[in-house]
Length: 200
View 1 (tube, rainbow, N blue to C red):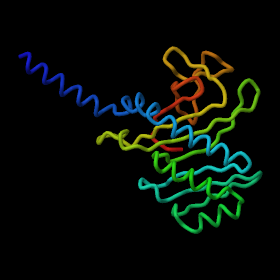
View 2: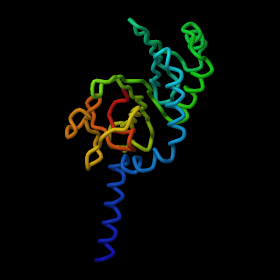
View 3: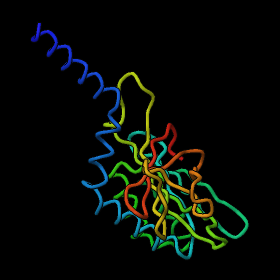
View 4: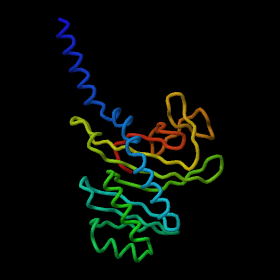
């Protein structure tokens, strides 16, 4: 009987592990990849400082690239094969650091990053910004679930979190802050994460 109970418990744990791959992913992924993720964030902030843009990979093979270039009045959206001459020509047209952007694209692909962008917001009447970085990783997918994305929000200042590590609104200390309709949880004092069914 004990053997059967042990076997049932083992099977149940296995099933739970399959149902909730995001739990294991949460604990391990950021710490294991912190240097690479911080490098991507810093590269992006440097490159987008004077010419705002965002990058997304539109396919699971990370070969189809979307580039959104933001000017004062217009958003230009382009789609390329990531190694195409058209991408190079566009980067030159808008006076981007061509080598820097290509290095960023390479690092994003190596780390399964599907999207990176900047979001402006106001905190205590002061304009702030955060960097959004979304990751598509095979370890997030249980075979009977829809695809999930791991989204990191890099804030430029320390944030407030409640006792369950949920991100709070600094203007309303007890109210949870949602971003794009999602509740974010603490990684550290200035980084939060969420699991979403969409990458942007």
